Length: 124
Image 1 (tube, helix red, strand yellow):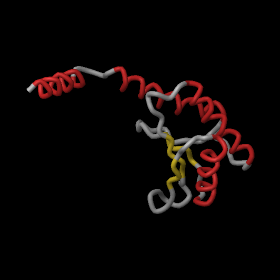
Image 2 (cartoon, rainbow, N blue to C red):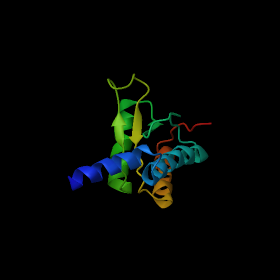
Image 3 (spheres, rainbow, N blue to C red):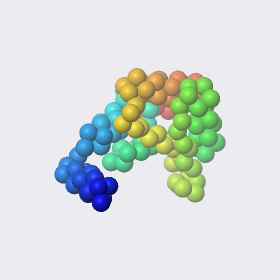
Image 4 (cartoon, helix red, strand yellow):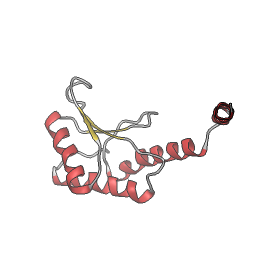
């Protein structure tokens, strides 16, 4: 009975409005969406909690996704055909509420380095 009361209290709390974790998560996602713009890393502008970095090429997408985990200790997932149309391949980055500004700076710097090394087109 006590655990049921606790569960109901938790549900009431969550329904009462945005909690600190959700607010921080939204802030982190917005930050990850904003910072690549500064260095020209192309990404989709969408309301999702997943940030899609546009790569446009299945081999290139896989090649890029393999590099950060090996060299930069960053994990993002390559999304290729048949999940997305050919030519719109992307990397999916999912920030969490626990990521710091330093983590996000590290991600953006790693992507910028890769974009430069591979002479990829940057967003305007």
